[in-house]
Length: 235
Ligand code: DC
Image (tube, rainbow, N blue to C red; front, side):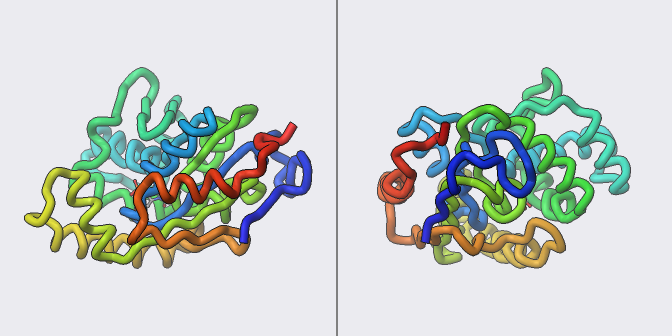
């Protein structure tokens, strides 16, 4: 089932232009970033990875505090930093953090960082401000459920755990060798993501669920483009 926003209302949250969003959620390795970029290119939209912002906050905290520090420090860091997110690129003020976001250190600490409700609220505010007035594909865990509940189209991508682990290993140039460790790490992050008190990983009630284990990126992209209303973005 696919959600279609009823006209151009601003939605129950009252946010301007919240309907000019295509929301893609799913677990790690389900192909969200690649697919979001593909859909954005096809329709000439901007896209962003919300996970990249959680990773960038984690990276900055590690650099500033030598760890993730207390929740209050993290929250101040999130609020006091001027963030620019575009695709999977993240700047903190004029510092490009993109190349540092996938270290094993960030991998292991981003889950506790993103589990703090006050941090999520601050991240969500930054994401909404970023997309305001534009036409966006956004991807993450809670784009369709929490951050953009009025998104025109909501998609939840999934894939079998072993397929997702192989994709991640390939992405990191470690096919085979580290696949076992990556699979264990993904399973642990899935477990944490699904149990978060706020922003838990789950499909929105009105999301279209796409099982991508046996599909190519182009096939998934085609399926999503096919359900986007021809009048997107709404006037
Ligand atoms: O998609 P990713 O693997 O880059 O996400 C990194 C982490 O951030 C992952 O542990 C889940 C978390 N995350 C989240 O809690 N909410 C989002 N909207 C996006 C990511």
